[in-house]
Amino acid sequence: MNALSLFSSIGIGELYLSELDVNVVVANELIPKRAEAHQIIHDNCKMITGNIVDELIKEQIILESKQKNVDFILATPPCQGLSSAGSNKTEDSLLYDKRNYLILHALDIIDRLEPSYILIENVPRFFRLLFPYNNSLVNLETLLLEKYRDRYNIKAEIMNAADYSVPQTRLRAVFRLWKKNLDWVAPVIEPNQVTVRQSISNLPTLEAGMTSSIKNHWARIHPENQILWMKHTPTGCSAFSNEIYYPQKENGEKIKGFKNTYHRMGWDKPAPTITMRNEIISSQENVHPGRSLPDGTWSDARVLTPRELLILSSCPPDMDKPDNLSDNEFRQLIGEGIPPLMLKKIVKGIVM
Image (cartoon, rainbow, N blue to C red; front, side, top):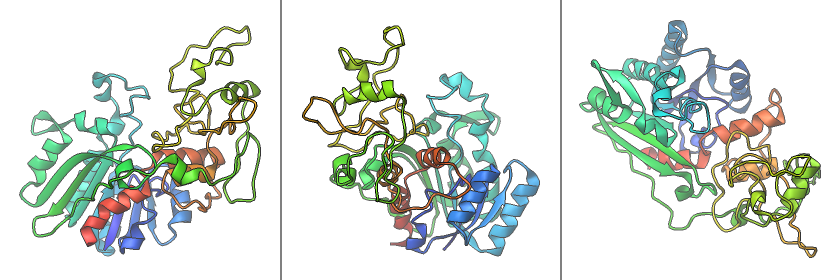
């Protein structure tokens, strides 16, 4: 089955779909650098670079999809406008961010192509966003039901990547649509979640700035004061809880911050949600769990190596970084994408 990927970025979520004989043959991405990286990773896909709001771009997407017999549409609109960590911290502010309404342009394409299967995914807050429809404001589930209930089965739910063998807790709003005469079996929740220990504890310890002979396993350089604070921070804890070595200004005054920052991951549960800013120690729960050392300090006072990041995101650990992306850009785009193993298990229900 041939597929169209809208808002595709560099195609992280698409990495394993070909294993199901679901081939992404057309993709659309707004940002040229991301579109170029997508072409490097998915070299058999026709990339259409440009804004889906532009009618010429939209017509090109539709034409290419028709020519390639697309029968599955994957739409993963940008979620930065919905993130509570971003500028839109109130419900009212969501109404004025144009990024939150790009999905309506994806529905225009769905109306023209009438594929057998459609998958829309975003952050859970997407459920609360209201869209204009028939002179009223409705949430996306209601909108989809109003438009498509006669032709499609519709299922909307919040799924956790950790329930599908991904060693990371990541909640996603998932909308599945499939034509009335077809089936789409829901993925089975795994009885046991995969932990950080099971995933990356076999990799050798690295301190900030160190490298190894293992592909993608090298550690970023961090400020010395941050390294000192994290060396005195146990597994699963924040440096803000330290009695002496806590985040502080040059004059010794304690920095104000949240307890989920300057924070080490735990070993025996899935990783917390990996964010786009996974390259800095001061962001949310980004620091390696560490191991207790004889002198009372803790090892691995650093963020994840690229290999650890790829593993916890269910990406191939030996994956090559596209040459046109910096290390930080690659890390951030991994943190932005839906874990590919999660997407594979959802889509597998189509072809069982």
